[in-house]
Amino acid sequence: MYWMSHLTVDIGGRPGIDCRGFCDYCYFRHVKDVAPLGCRYCLPFKKGCDYCSRGVKEHYTGFKSLKTVADETLGSLQVLTGDVTRITVSGGGDPSCYPEFRDLMELLGSMESPLHIGYTSGKGFDDPAIADFLISNGLAEVSYTIFSSDPALRRRYMHDPTPEASLAIFERLSAEIDVYAAGVVLPGVNDGDDLVRTCEWLDERGAKGLILMRFANTSEQGLILGNAPIMAGQKVHTVQEFADLVTGLNEQFSMKISGTPLCDPEIGSPFAILHEPDLLKKLPLVTGRATVVTGSVAAPYIRRLLRMRGYQGEVAAVEKEIACLITIDDLKDLELPNLGDVVIIPGRAFVHEAEAERVLSADGTARMVVRGPEMLTADAETSMGMKMSGVLRMEMEGFAALINIINQNG
Ligand code: SF4
Image (cartoon, rainbow, N blue to C red; front, side):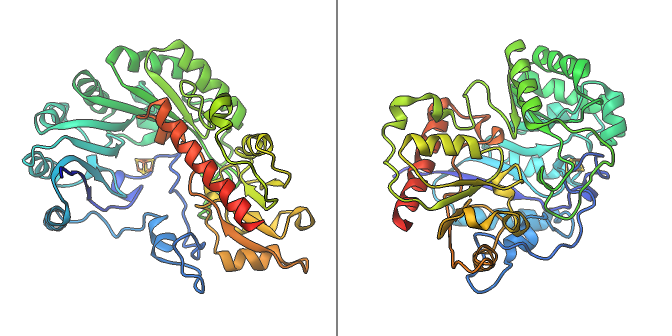
């Protein structure tokens, strides 16, 4: 049998520190040493595991040496079966700031598989010639932070010492390979006319797509590492304002423009399945009444879909907007009398189940907590390279699993 294998090369590094200093809007700024939150990987009797105490914070000690990266890559190759069809470079720090970046690229390029850089800000690139070097070493795809096509804004907010060079590299790469641009939108800084100019710049250069990220500045908006606010006094879009911005821009430009937390206008996600009555009919009917807890963005969609399949229970929304970032503090704010005896929490919530049961039974009614599916839909980062059929399949699988969990648990 023929196997295809993806190889991930982890270069380590610390966000902000191994990126030539923090971008002003970085999600990892001001991160405190918070106690482990608990998660789906924790053992039932112990809150905190490697994932939720270290992985989430991307808590590396610094970039790994080239020798370590090479040794680890060799080790991974030995356990992979078949040809390597794609190599992805990832890490906590920014690959463009990796001290032995050229040697690393030559080493990986010699394996003659398409290279993919999972994410770079480009801040570490000072010489435009690096673009051709990357292309000749097999770079096929990169996600590259644009923030703005105005070098002055990159310099000011990303602390990019050579913004003109970073943009020249972006331009050269876009002409040859698949470049996905990404950018956090700061209202009053890089939205409005600047964002339209940036989209024009990207479209003209042949970028494959642009993912816009709504800036988060409070715990409800997703800062769960004790680090709010990131930028004191900075204005933030509401989820709806942001979705309208993304939808409007996507209509104006030929490249694909999507946003997180909302939305991918071309595919209709999140929850594209709501527009597909024939698919909805194929989902199982809901016979159980278990309460479904979710984030405030997803709640109306999930409620609507489950009701269409006969659900008579409660979809309870916490204030946290993103379901995957729910923590125990969000559960503490729920109105307990509104909850059933069985409560389903999002699969990825940063909550330890035993603690959740204690908190949700505080009114004297013993409640059982069950973890739901990991994903019910695709966010824009997931859907960027996907076709609509793939997103619908994900949603069908997610909802079928959720309904089965509701039915099995009452
Ligand atoms: S490049 Fe990314 S990880 Fe590094 S400081 Fe900027 S936003 Fe944070």
